[in-house]
Length: 262
Image 1 (cartoon, rainbow, N blue to C red):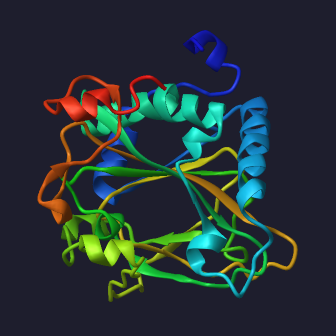
Image 2: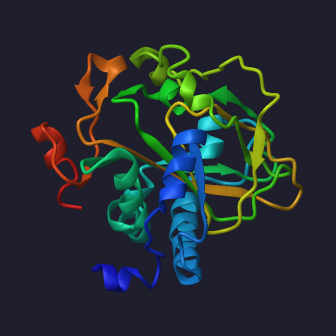
């Protein structure tokens, strides 16, 4: 689908100079209405169809992975795939990372009502340490998100500390070990969101989320992560991180070929 048609679903834009500076200073940025109303409606329909095929309501007998995550959602939703590969985030990420970019993660990150599990302070680069250290997480909300139903909290400027501790090893990733960074959270702030808004933040940004304490509201988020096209996995003998090349070039043939037919 070309960009003209995709404009029915996505709001394309570029960051202003002040927005770029704010991201560099604070480590995060909230993008308003990255999806049109039509785009939000269709994307939610496709994502919920995929979720309901594999998941049920929150089940306290199941682990957090089952209850909260559905990986590779771009394989299951055509509109997510367009959003991930050709949507407005690609232009924005290019401004922040540079001309050569790959998409390295797509997943649904849901806290359905009843899921009161908090996620402790961590850096996303703790779960998958990539170098260069400029990967960006992008969280697009499908719901009204507040402190009641598990919004994210961030510590502005905390990305300037760099990598606080080594990321998980390959074996730790396989067993889904949780990363916990001890920190002074006195300067933390909540990040409430409206449907269609997108929160982006640096791979070193300290963030957490509390459990969903709402009796009648879910907290459904589309999580996408972008990295430099030549980013390598520090935890995996510096092998290139595989991901769809969405802009520019890469020195790794395996990255250039990865999901190129999608």
